[in-house]
Length: 136
Image (cartoon, rainbow, N blue to C red; front, side, top):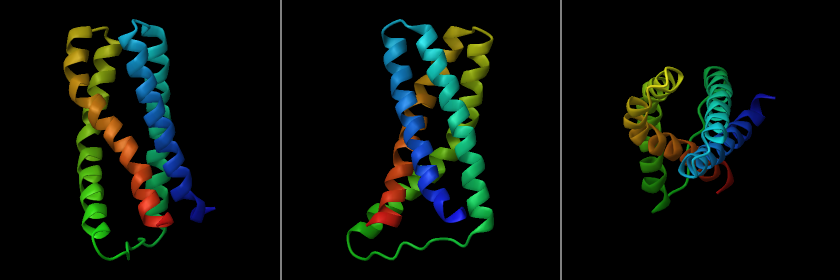
């Protein structure tokens, strides 16, 4: 089971990315209910991802990126930016949800201007890292 977690994690990130894009489309079209459903779903899927990710990394040895040449610095640049931004975005997500629950829409929008693109980038680059590490 544990050997399947990286693929499951990549799939969970892909679902999160899709939900974030749909949420963006919904809010731009004025569909607050669709937006809210997608954002809550993205939060739940991301929570499942984080639990699975931590379970895997606390119980399995690290997988080394063994490719050489131009792809190596590309991989580590993506990995580094992904990792840093994953940590940075977490409090922003909580703050955005807090303001949404309180219906403090102007405060929510100010946080989301940063949180949404960072969260979307992290959700997109997660599967990219998986593909580079396991499928190249």
